[in-house]
Length: 102
Image (cartoon, rainbow, N blue to C red; front, side):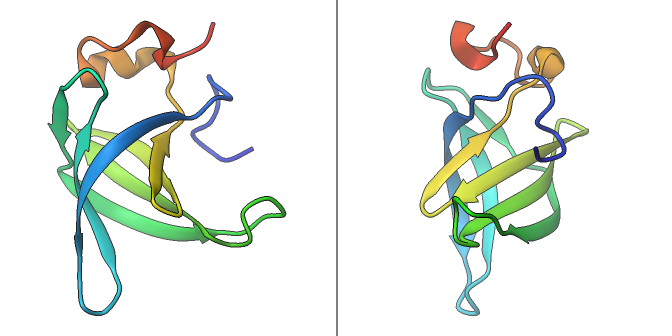
């Protein structure tokens, strides 16, 4: 289990607007939710490549700042997702009912 994945075992997929540099570095800029709301990513603090049996080392974890709170954002291939926690409504305002389990 990854750190930051404490409340929900189900990933919540989001759209991400990102800058792709010539060097191959990808820097996410905006999180966009299915209902249409968007949040600007204030800072990308750290990027880690994750390895495991199921992802062949193709997964990355970004430690980002959203409204002053640190959150993990994951990327597997071209899909972006987060593992939501109960207190995320403080960051995102209103969230969809299926945003978290439990």
